[in-house]
Image (cartoon, rainbow, N blue to C red; front, side, top):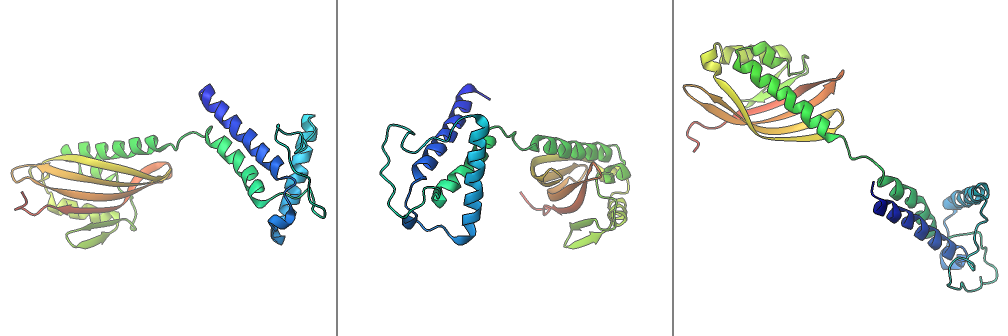
Length: 234
């Protein structure tokens, strides 16, 4: 983290403190505090005073905080009540301060794992290993595979379909993926769009959509929607 960024974050904290001190003597009549919030505000200010006591610095009076003078508090108002906006600023500042220190989401690892899975599938297919290709799928009866206007359920049903449609290396051809767009949905889920193509005597290709999740530390495809381009497509 750069020094400039740290200074900006400290500035946010100082600005928030100034706003809270300025609002310390704001007339209660100017902004009524809803009953459900009064206990929260009272506890917040009690904790604030305790923190200042631990730090060894007395809480500054609004009259002493900065060069600006604060008008006298109207009679009948309580200086220990603050506006809802001031409390909101105080509650938000820690989040703003910590956001700058927070590491970015670890999406690169998800993308890399998904690419590795697809590469493993491509290599298995190109050496004629259909079962090796199917290792990238969730080995479960809950796996769904949509293609040709119908949906198959189960890992074994998907394997049987591949074996029927691609009985030998000539039918399998050489598989290529392109235009991959991998979108991490969380640390354990991802969504993939892409194109596929089989280079063979009669080339064929199309698009696919995959949903993957991490199951017991291993990424697997839990849903595959694959479609082929029409033969007369340009």
